[in-house]
Image (tube, rainbow, N blue to C red; front, side, top):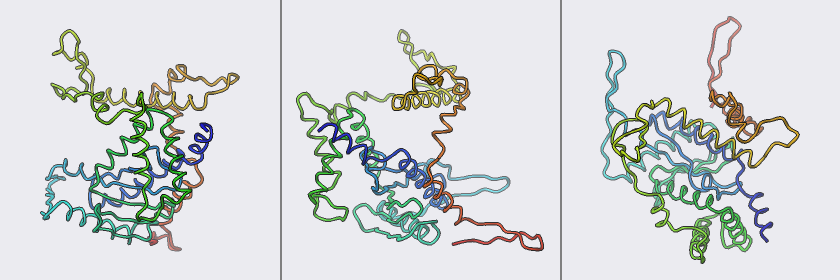
Length: 341
């Protein structure tokens, strides 16, 4: 039975390629929203990122406007001064509806590949629903659903704590779908999210518990403490706690350390899944981490990771290009511009 559960998981789970395509789609929607809200961020959430999503699931997106509030209300450019003013609205919900209404209109008229745009503004959580043809995703965009980001993060943690959790959840969902207990159409049926919560609760109540409760996770996380000074990195001397032993570290060096640590961890994770054969001369493990290319932060592995080799993604990019402004030259050598809609 264990093998059957794991096989079902491998056949149903989102591939790395599909996950990257979802992030790419979010970045495209972010470019459109940035025309109205500079420095906004469109973040995927839900099944697309919590490791419990299956192939073909919807792409849930969150329009994060927090960075906008951190911007200065005055910006100068040369001899000119720009002042940003925000109109007052009666409530946060009305503000959310107005924002999504504007974004919905923009996607409907100018969003490349965005079709069947619906503005569902009177729902408990207002959203804009549309289909993104180049990627094939059914998308839901919200802007006042931050708790969903926290839920996605929590599910990701539970899935990473024990490898059996995801396999059990996928199997329960498949069983429910086979007996018409769940449906892709909203109605009186139980949802996949509810089933996932039931499974997690069941695993928390085992003796001994397989998964920790949220309260226990909060305890394990400890208490957040602010740095006593403005240094990029603060490490206390255990015998003289007022002394910062890393006060000399600059912001650029801290960023370099973080990037290299992240890259090294990614290399080791990839090799756990696909270790080179003994006959190969390719370095692996610690030897791979000591390569000069990694130290210079120009690892070929990273380039490979960040490149989109899939034919489907190539087709997506070509489709996007076809919707952009193209330059042509007439017989007189003059440059003309034509725009495709």
